[in-house]
Figure 1 (tube, rainbow over the protein chains, first blue to last red):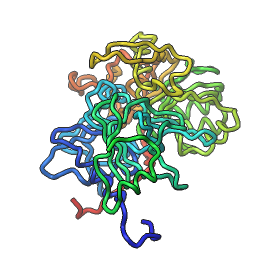
Figure 2 (figure 1 turned 30 degrees about the vertical axis):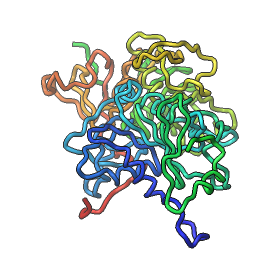
Figure 3 (figure 1 turned 135 degrees about the horizontal axis):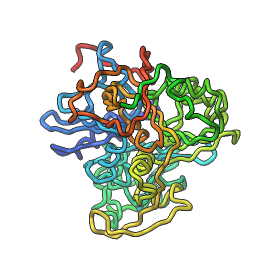
Figure 4 (figure 1 turned 180 degrees about the vertical axis):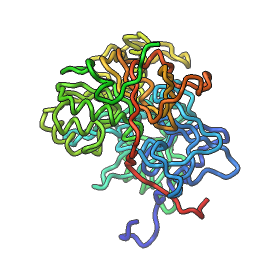
Length: 219
Length: 241
């Protein structure tokens, strides 16, 4: 939470996750990334059946286990302990990524360091810093049907993250369908179209947004 | 019947280890890693090893133990965080790392095990991963012509695998998310050694429910008792939803 502003402007992390959850549909199979995207699981409408996939090899992720239920053989892609559901299914990593790369997963929500106006995404390495690796991020953006990025609108130093062209090494080229930030939501109809501003967060004006965005978007 | 069961991890690896091997290793983080076999590889003293493994263990766990003893020359991995000694060796140039996207790595193992030396994938197109690789346009599943890159199958000298149970002929089952890379790793090894929690008599498993048929498994060892490590212990309180 920031304290420099008396009037709440924009969305909190949890509100961004709730906004992403509005894109879910009944029957969807969904992969959630680490960080804000994980919070989307808390906002699945109760009347909806949404099955969460974890790329290490499970469909149907249950809530975190109780202390008694903890099982070292049952973790999510963030290596956190999880629980199973009555409809859960396990499979190996090759099968898991076959369902990701084969276009069988409906939606993924990911964090990003940069998104470009052409749909490029960078979220795996910063030159000069220790490279930890891309994990499954490149597979997800290449294979999942719908890619939603949830990220802070600006980096810690205030620089915009939705920009004309990525400066960091890419995770995927022309793959992002929707960008949800703490200030606004941008969406595009297809991978040949520009992003369109479809929603402003409470208290954010179009001028505020334009002043903090270098990417081209239509309104 | 050929005997596949060995009395110890060291015995199960006898005659298989030498310097400069390419070893495919199962596990995701610390979940489902072949810890007894990795200990035995460390104790053997062989060096110059290349590991195809999704992760590199953490400090002093899993492959992390072999990094400490400088037995590893190269890692083929998708994610190597949470490991200080790894970071030190990597930044100093002692350790070579080939980053392979997680799905590409799993498929490279699966393909190698299926006798497929290369395959095209959309993963990594337009990124650093594509550098130096052949790019080819295909119609693809949605009919639109798109670029794909050529990735190589992995043919490992040796596969190290951790499973839940095996029968005496080497049919294997895994438990929950500990299956992960263990299946594709097993497939791509010229020789595959599996450590299990329990060996059961033939006929115990329903043949419809075997995850890794015995044809892939040359040697077995019981590694119990296991004190399985957890990287991030996350819980909820009992009365919540």
